[in-house]
Image (tube, rainbow, N blue to C red):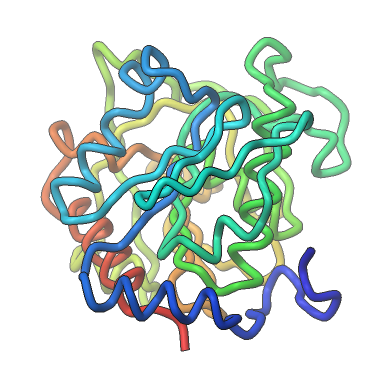
Length: 276
């Protein structure tokens, strides 16, 4: 259980086990990164999660898949088995150096106090919602480096108290023939400082998103779509070491320009730095 005094926007002190894990990770410089997934079987991972895993391994990290239907197994063999609702013990995050909330289907609108109004019921997985929202809230409370990608961007916003625009057109493309648009990065934002550019060309695979009205308190707008300037495509927290969400898929580095790689490098640098 979380300390009752820990809120989504504030960090809790690191416990002895977490401090030991951080020290061990610093000594090896190989951060252990959790990656969420709808399923944990090999076929699903190969089809939907492999680019996250390959990117992390290429950059010198050790990924751990966290799914609602199979145990998450750490490099030392320790396993965390999900409960009947798909949730895992929050102590798992004490053993990780960072967390990626990966892309996928729709979040049920009940988690942000709304009725179905464009979200696709067939794309909703309540066990995954329970898993990821719980992990996101605890990661925020622990000040664990957190990277939300596409659906993960939305999960992070909901976990922090925000909502979502449930459906709109013009931003969903097939993986086999993606289309791209620009995101204008806000002056002074962390993502602009990391990317080193004012505008990013991004891929686009989504039909839901966040605008000014649904942005969570404690998170800030890091960049918006062009020409759809109402649509926030990058969010970040000024109150955490490294918390960022992007509405695109930067793990698909093979179809994106170089600045996207810098996001991964920055995330892993923060993950290596450990918690104080």
